[in-house]
Amino acid sequence: MAAPCAEDPSLERHFKGHRDAVTCVDFSINTKQLASGSMDSCLMVWHMKPQSRAYRFTGHKDAITCVNFSPSGHLLASGSRDKTVRIWVPNVKGESTAFRAHTATVRSVHFCSDGQSFVTASDDKTVKVWATHRQKFLFSLSQHINWVRCAKFSPDGRLIVSASDDKTVKLWDRSSRECVHSYCEHGGFVTYVDFHPSGTCIAAAGMDNTVKVWDVRTHRLLQHYHLHSAAVNGLSFHPSGNYLITASSDSTLKILDLMEGRLLYTLHGHQGPATTVAFSRTGEYFASGGSDEQVMVWKSNFDTIDHGEVMKVSRPPATLASSTGNLPEVDFPGPPGRGRSVESVQSQPQEPVSVPQTLTSTLEHIVGQLDVLTQTVSILEQRLTLTEDKLKQCLENQQLIMQRATP
Image (cartoon, rainbow, N blue to C red; front, side, top):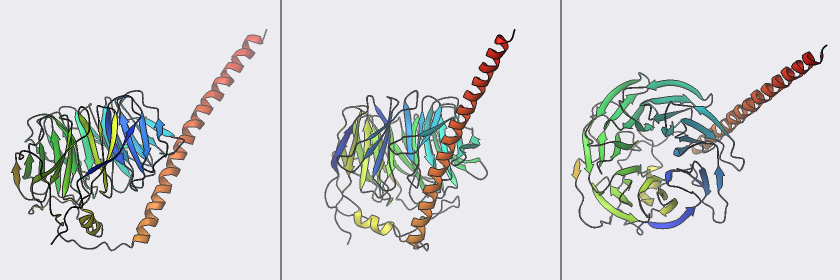
């Protein structure tokens, strides 16, 4: 019999420093740092260790709409209403490289699991894929007919999913760059979308107050939740894949049990709309942000046993082959009041990872060092270009002075 939950989720701490609504949050891989972006145009990096000072990074010229740590944790990407993406080294210096990514607001940025590329979504109606280390544009996906609010890679990097104000969620094959399927069940703008950790399902949030879960192999709608009384602005899967958390303009966060298709918790904390939510990479914590300018960190207090087992197994690749979904098919209008789980449910057993943990750690360290080295070279190149421009200007001025001095 599965172990009961230890206790209800609890508010661990909250961070105050933003001067306007918080729009996005993301944890680093080791949960030592938490990044948040705001309408105040500032990127904050908070340290989970008590009494540690936060970093405030400035550079964007307008509201920050999205943040995402690279898989190694050595880089941090942000997108903004100023139409740019910045890649930061999240240390005390806060150095960054900016490049013009789109012709309108950048709404979403997400690294691929290998850290070699990232995907962006924009109000210019496009989804774009970039090479991380070269910071080079690779290709664009352009079938949406309205703003694209979110785009994410699948866990294996072979698929991309996007959500748009055209009321559709689109699934793309990365290699062929073709739209594989369009999901059109939402009754309003689709605000957020993400892959289930297994890569076999996607969940999308909408302005129609709903959350929908589809199987990406059969394209069937598996679950439908109408729990919030206002727009759902963001969602995040627990790493085990058993739970989903949502953030809504009704000021609440809700935790759903996907295995049983029911509401577990409704959490109140934000004064005003809850705009964003994200689980940590281990699932021990989740963070939320709101229009009240606050970033809150919660302890999940559940599924610790399940997650320990899940971390030992590999993720199956996302595939387009027809297959039975792992999640139960439930149309869930939402029961009154607050539910609570008494059991935690384990995912289906999968094959164990064959790569030794030491080798994995070494590879991650190498990739992390490459991230930092690439970023440093890029910053040096920018400074060298500026120096060359100044030298040229000085030489031109000197030549002009000499010409004027010549009788």
